[in-house]
Length: 329
Image (cartoon, rainbow, N blue to C red; front, top):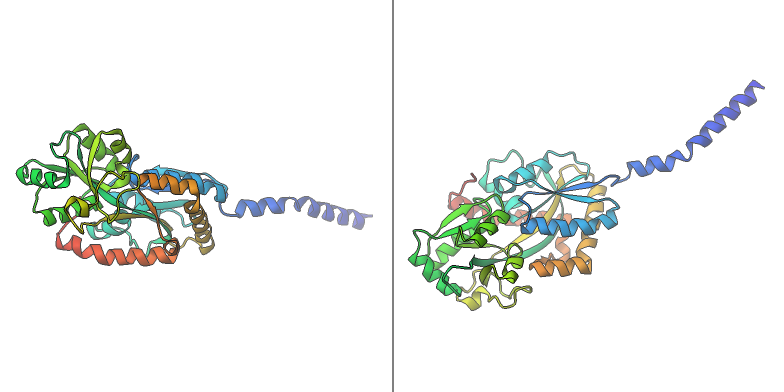
């Protein structure tokens, strides 16, 4: 009697445990909670807009919300550093640009290594820069801007998203190419700089096109040229630098997605698959086209492709930064 009772209790306990097994498996699967995507700039800039478009679409294949968090400062190194120090579990991601994941490595004595301490997920998109001025600046084309800068070198100002950022380097190259001079005014991201440009507190900016599309369409700023071989799809009336009289002055910025190093490969694969699916979505592609951002080539939408490209960009830009003796502030 006692033996039969013990066996009954044993079987009952085992049966009671069976329904719990699937629940435990689901709890341990990735992702099981919201994911943070850290933007290393202030809200309103091109990276922030891209992040929100991407995050909204990635939640479908991931089955969890992707929450965008803006952490600005030190040309993006503060936001990137936060992800480097995060747990390598796939719940904290770093979305960034040429500036934050290439240039800052030559600008700052970082407490982390951009190549060794981050795990690439995918390149996302790229876009050319726009040469833009305040609406009240008395110029109507690029050649008139160059002439105005030469005549007003003692007071002309250009806004940049931090010392050593893409706009800063493009501005230095522009000065050398045109023989002009102007003072750089650093901001904590492109958003605040654009607001000051609209208000007339600075004269020009040479920054990624997505920072200006809405303002240009609203007529609050003037675009004189796009730094590419082809015109901007969302601003077809803006000439290329070739057409505007500054041939070959090409510059662009690209965007990528990373996780902390040691993030499991299967988690990276899951994030990559969700990213690739999002980038293939017609609505996402249309939105990025409006912003002037072009989807990265498919072979770059891989961890290996992004890693190779990131390293090549470092080899291109770091010598230029060091030759100009630019230091992060």
